[in-house]
Length: 171
Image (cartoon, rainbow, N blue to C red):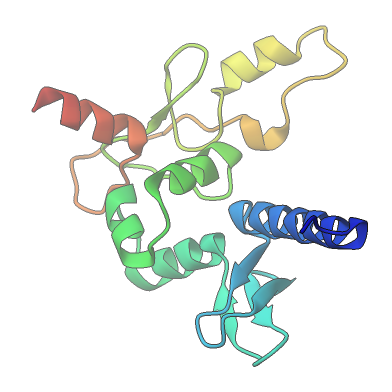
C-alpha cells in the first residue's frame, strides 16, 4: 500500500524538524534533557532549560568557564576531562577570544599568519594590523590576540591542541 500524500508530507516535516534539532544541538543552542529526554532550549546566559521538567544545565562554554573559576588555569585536556567538553571546542573558545591562556604559561596558541605565540585570538597584533591596513573589512577585535608578556616554567599552564599534537607526534 502506497503512502498518501499527507503521510509523505508528515514524514518530510518530521525529518526537517529532526534536522533543525540536530543543528541546534550541534551548535550548542539546544540539548536533550538528561532527566526526561525532552528538548532543552537555550534560556539565558550560559544555561539550557527544559520546558517539560524545568531542569537546567550549563552550555559547553558555561561548563568551561565554571571549571576555570573553580579550579584555576589548567591545560585543555584537564578542562576537557573535567567538563566533558571536547578539546577542539576549548581551542575554538581560545581562537574566538572567549577564554585566554594566563600570562606566564609555558605554552600558547600560535598566530595563524606568522606563528608568533599569542594568549588568545587568531592573529598577533602585528598581523592583525597588517590585515586591517587599507581594507574596508578587517579583522574583528576578538580575532586579534595578545602576545604574552612573560613566560615561566610553572604549573598551572594551559595547553592547547597545538601543544598536545606536538606531544603526540614525538611519541
